Amino acid sequence: MKVFKTIAWVLLIAFVGIQFFPTERNQSEAEYASDFMEVNTVPPMVQNKIKVSCYDCHSNNTKYPWYNKVQPVAWFLEDHIEEGKNELNFNEWGDYSDRRKNSKLRSIISQIEDDEMPLDSYTFIHRDAKFSESEKKEILKYMTQLKNKL
Amino acid sequence: MKKLKITMSILTMALVALTTMSCKDGKKEGSTAPMSNEMHQEDAGSEMMADNSSNSESSAIIDNYLKIKNALVADNQEDAAKAGGMLMADLKDFDKSKYSSDKQRELTDIIEDATEHAEHISESPMEHQREHFDILSKDMIDMIAITGTSKKLYQDFCPMYNNNKGAQWLSSTEEIKNPYMGSKMPGCGKMQKEIN
Image (tube, rainbow over all chains, first blue to last red; front, side):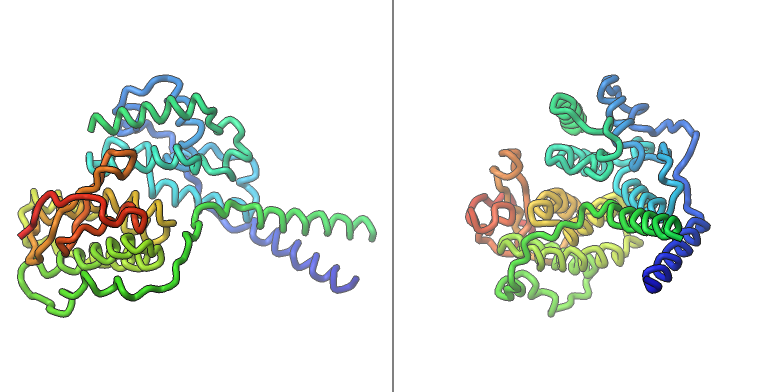
């Protein structure tokens, strides 16, 4: 029992301790002229869905949930967002060359087609980020159009 | 005292739960076929004859591109991944300085794109590797159009891949060995063009 208590204390102290590590926030109020929604004419439904489902990790502005303030969750989110933005940043869409746009669109289409994006771990908490079958079809149709126009 | 213990266990459980629930998606290992060495050397022979001509850097890039191709022909996810990692390094080392600023801009674009595809190939299951290889092949063709190459290459085309949209690839052998369909249809495709 004593061992258990010691372990519990150590964990508690560690848990409290890591709360003091700062995390970088992915937040920006800026409006981007190069944003995906600015450089393309995106239908309102597609626009809304992509903003809700993708922008948290694929733009410069994340709408943080409350549990982000708790470590170690904050670290995992930070990693995810960094990786996500590296792969695709909707805010910088207009700055991508046609070659890059083509690559990105190909990946967007294949990831959504295979239900790999949005991530299950994300939609598990953000229920509204899930794509319905019809939303998925609409988005894929739009992205394919965009790709064919390049 | 009892209360403290209960609080502790709740906290501990919460911590464990938080740690394990963190999003461990992605990074799925593809089927790892046993190492087969037979395909390794086929296209890579030119590494030995390190030519010091003006396109020596692009030659390392092409060699590792061809290694990815051979691995995909052999359905070998692991070798393709390894070659993808090496290709990333080669792309990073490529020296653009002797090209005009226009060409440099274009090369930067191609290299940036190709690096991303090489990275994905280095860490993805095979079907994803093939998707990225498709676009990587386009990058390679465009790059060689600028840099030229001393190698004898064949530009091939598979009409069936990607729901019949088709896909190109480069090979150093005249015989068709399809990297997109793998062992299912190794001979599918036709030569479009000879380079050199």
